[in-house]
Image 1: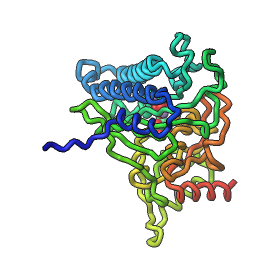
Image 2 (image 1 turned 90 degrees about the vertical axis):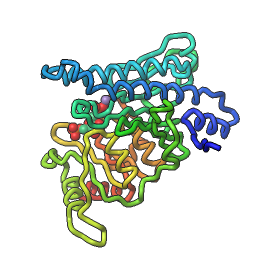
Image 3 (image 1 turned 180 degrees about the horizontal axis):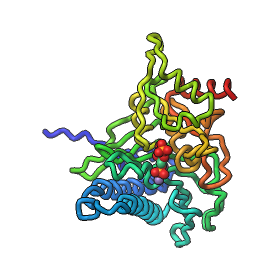
Amino acid sequence: MNSYNITTLDDFIIRRQKDYPEAKGEFSRLMHHLGTAAKMVSMKVKRAGLSDILGQSQNMNVQGEIQQKLDVYADEVFTAALLSSGECCGVATEENQNIITFTHEFAVNGKYIVCIDPLDGSANIDANVSVGTIFSIYRRVSQRGEQVSEIDFLQPGTKQVAAGYVIYGSSTMLVYSTGNGVNGFTLDPSLGEFCLSHPGMMHSEKGRIYSVNEGNYIKFPEGVKKYIKYCQENDTETERPYISRYIGSLVSDFHRNLLKGGIYLYPESKNYPTGKLRLVYECNPMSFLAEHSGGMGSDGSGRVLTIVPESLHQRIPFYTGSTEMVKRVEKFIAENQ
Ligand code: AHG
Ligand code: MN
Ligand code: MN
């Protein structure tokens, strides 16, 4: 007899729904549509190099245009999928200055809003390096049946119902959490299904990888500089020097560190006085995943998830990963103010 031992993302979502007898399947439908959009973007990303081969690679602007097209494509696909789920009444994305309010009758009644970075690390596309999508799901605070407003999107990260990312890497994976563990699903291209491959993902308490754009070192705050030097020191007991790895796609750097143990740092610097990464659709979802896998997400002085966002595209300094490492960089920062 052939063995059949596959848990698809849809199976998994339905099984989890049964743990909540009051659930009506609204969240499950939303997640299903996010999964479908992820498959569509995955197919497009995997063909990105072919577009170059078909005659555009000589044009210096084309690299930028292709990236832009993929940013826009991913944005359109995820937004359309969320609309057609019927469970989402509005979206905030990196690609739009303002929130997108769904006015269709079936969507206005949606219970959820979604914040999304449709294509993260898109500057890496032209070098065939992994990119991702980040998403964050909240219950709306406004009344169902009314149009959403920005207030719905400016909730602290502690209010997230779920968060996740898709990594378009050597394989495509979708990793998400509803606050009950972090689970990873690998896209089986032959089945066209996300299949549970990484159940119960956990950050190790201590890690040995530090991920930071070290080219900006001179512009970093004193405490961060000292922490980086700490990572580079020789000490056999704590297995230093640590390993330096930086891809330049938050999703990919975070994913590797989640699997192998490490810290991702994007401090404030002279170029980015309040940090580069966006609280609402980058730092909050990643911090939610970090915390639910035993790690931390910090802005250098405290928990990211408790920050009340002031604006959709607000930037913050960001430190996330293994608890011991995040606590240590916080300590270095506090001691060097
Ligand atoms: P995005 O492509 O969505 O704008 O995000 C890019 C972000 C993040 O993914 C990455 O970690 C960081 O920018 C890299 O920045 P540097 O090139 O400054 O290191
Ligand atoms: Mn991004
Ligand atoms: Mn992006």
